[in-house]
Image (cartoon, rainbow, N blue to C red; front, side, top):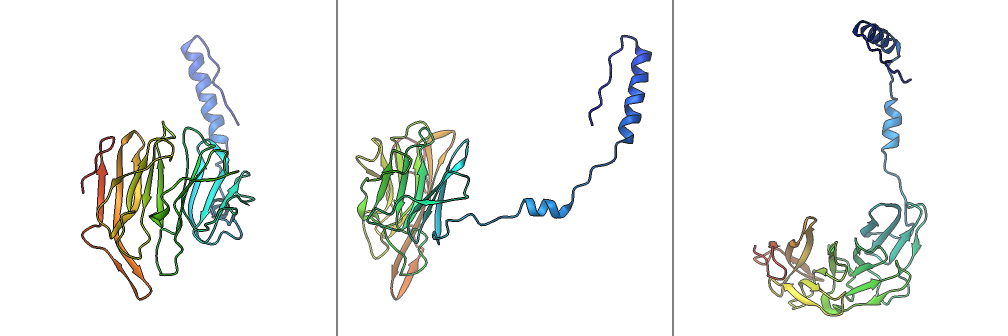
Length: 253
């Protein structure tokens, strides 16, 4: 119910109108909300994909509540264009299954990046990947863009104002010391890569985040880890948090 106070030029008439308004407002019954309805409305529900299993990464498009991408550590990339009601497999033709990271270019939603390999390593049977892939047509086709030996990609960050400026967080194969670990950067859409953060051969990147207000500032989590069939060795002097505050300089712990 909407009540409006009519305008009168004289003060006494306005006071009378205000009194009538307050009396009517007092007569409006209080509105109550069933607490069960609130709990049901806020409850999580399963959306899928049915065969996705371990979902390691999810990406969406700002301003588009219907389109989502889900990357499964146990295999494949799935896309929904109806808010999660139906998912379609869009990566089955590629020679690798495990997906560790997904990213949609903020400046161009048709550009999708996928990092392969299960980054959340918890056992020796976790699946490694073969680098990164890029789609320029919203997931219809994919092209391998290198970093084959990185093993496991944990995060992909795309510059919001420049879709050719990409940062890759590589954990590594974990089977022993290697150079293909840390943070890699490309300034030409993945045609060439430069390693911009490296702690040591036993330490890989476990997390990466860019300041949304300043693309020159990045924070990287580094994890020293080595995994074998007989055990996992985790932590050490290589682990820590690093920050980069310039266009290409290595950050400080």
